[in-house]
Length: 118
Image 1 (cartoon, rainbow, N blue to C red):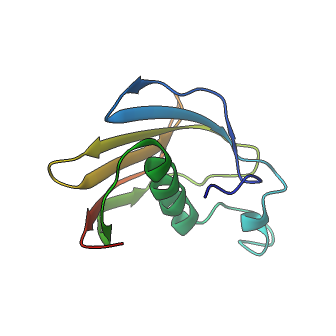
Image 2: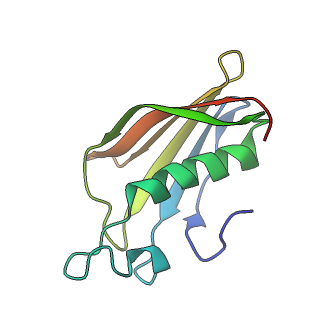
């Protein structure tokens, strides 16, 4: 289940193996509390979690999480950010590629492998 207080989806597109979501990360998001007091930053683990949650909502992902590969956190996601989340599912390899970005910068990207039972 997707957390309803997390983000708003403005657009979905593409094909059965790829989706683009426009996200707004609200200032009052609970994940900012304590991370960090003087400079609120969206934790990387939350970005990975969102990639998996939205991928499960849009694709027929099978199996449980097995590995993170090529994970890069390139820029800080700050409160009130507007981001594009690009998800690409490779059914053959059971791998999900994700990236959070804007037209000006990349925030994070990586690949998540799935296998075995949930």
